[in-house]
Image (cartoon, rainbow, N blue to C red; front, side):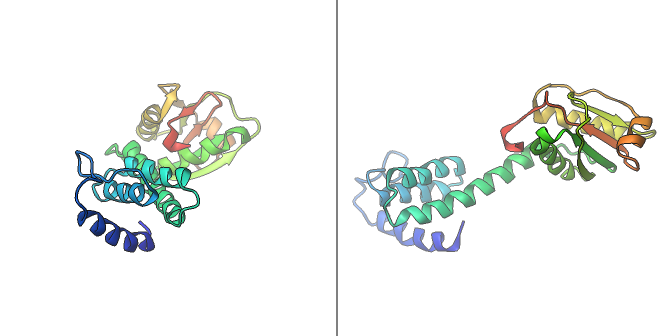
Length: 204
């Protein structure tokens, strides 16, 4: 969390600890009757490792008390938490224990560019060397092609996509030496990201 936020949190939590306990719920968390109390509650949740709940409470400070001096600190905390949470979600999605030692081209139409970039980022966590390419003539269906000798890498890529996608749930992978030579010469695996692909929110 931002150092400025952390420096504020410590005295806030000390003040709460010195209170008579009427401001605490059954979990020992601050109530939310003021900007200070909600900010303190968010801070407690953060220090307890409950990041999603802390994010909700910091957002509460911003939207319920927009004129509070604490709103700017809450916005800093929200930005940091969103970054932390998106990194954790991506790690969970890509922690397969498998690695892809291959050069991968991720191709799709310009309309799905955000999905192309998301897939490229995720595949890099598997060890693949990735290049993202947009092509107006790319197919509208999601499929993985592989060049000779790279079936295993393509299988890992296809299986990983199947976990990251909510639709389609399974991805075909098939030989494609001639296609790869035409579309992405020099690559071992070609991933076509079609308009049929619906990705988990953390990969968008």
